[in-house]
Length: 349
Length: 269
Image 1 (cartoon, rainbow over the protein chains, first blue to last red):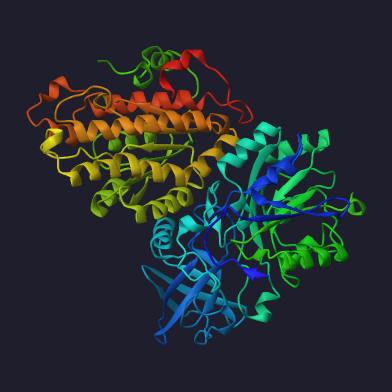
Image 2 (cartoon, each protein chain N blue to C red):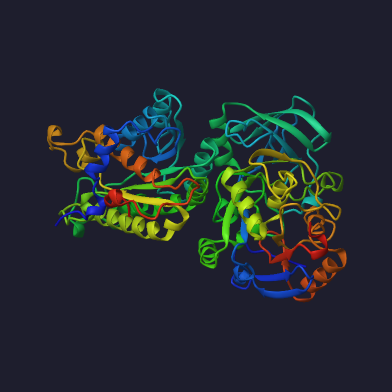
């Protein structure tokens, strides 16, 4: 597929491929996605705003330049902002493909990193020479200020202009806990929410600390997605229960929402409210207990996002989908086009 | 000319709260205040903290922010200039990061325009632009960046309020107050339209005139005013906090906003 290289969240020509429960494939302008929703459906999006999680700095022991990409944290609590897992790159920046980035200097437990106004200690390596546990110096507010001032959005080489936070915050963005944007949510704006309301479609949110999508290292990429903390508000758990009771569909906006809701599923179509840590990987063997359809970006086979789509419909249908995306010039990556896939009937619980 | 009734604090509403023993709806609420190190902003920081809110405040001067944060235990001090486009998202990251979300945004930071005050035709364009950057574009940008967090709060049944500080100069053509008055009139109209557009999302917009107060800004505008004739910022802060509390109470049990609350008609939109 063609990479979408302009940081425009809702390009007027954005496309939508729709796979229905009978595995029929159709196409529509993405702006019309609300028309595929029915009265009584419930749309759930991830309201996490994107943290400026890319930090440039220096490895104190060697003086070598590094880029740290924050990739995980133990919880969503505001004061729990001193410890992160992170992927470390060597010299250069997003303009070089991650696959081609030089490695950082060899990192050891206790190494110090100077990251603009922030200082951090490598607490330990996490089973890979570039995946570390970091601890920032200072109280939580100083860490938040340092990240806000010095951090940049994590970015890949297919978008050439440097991204600003306003490029990657969705319209509904709330707490800044995602490491990369929940980009399926780029399709939503306040006008779309009003259109849903008018149609009798409910809207709710969860907060999920969506992690990084690619590290450029095959071995590391195999570990994706990392564990991701999430929070499901009581009000959201409640509207899910009511939607299920009336036979409405639960439509997840983005893979992170599916991961959180299915992790919190209790088995009777309900979800537990509160905080959790999504640790599972979803794939063809997963039985979806809550989510009936997903609005997502276009994903290439082999990625963890594509694997998750295999929980919704069969491989033959996904192969046809990929062929259609290719043939009709759909664009991929975070600013690309979208798919709306309804769980195939035979997968129905 | 008079101020439209929707911009005036509604006395009976305010009295009602003090006469009853209801739990203070301000307790535990997450609030961000711009211009929080002097005048009305500082009084609001103190009032809201006293009533149990969790407060983040924004101001331009690092030393002032540090000193207020030291003196007001528990308040989160954020250095930033809301008239600067590049400061808005770093402010928004810190507000929602440090508070874990947001229930109330108070756009209080204001620029008077030319000091001393000038007739409009003597006002430098740069002074007018600065007043609009601080009083209109800044609040527009910050509100836009934070309205997602506010709407999330409303969906969770916590309630969500944006309070924009306006002035009688927005409605009365006081000579010398052109840059300030025109910008505050624009902010008031933004509030009204936002209020209409986000009513169904449960985000309430208030645009309120705190009155003529004994503050550094008033002293800059009218240096020879007798402070005894001016309102204390602490009194305005208490009234504004009450108005916020009343707006928060308009939420329904499950985040569904109540459609009408006639006794509060005066203070919203």
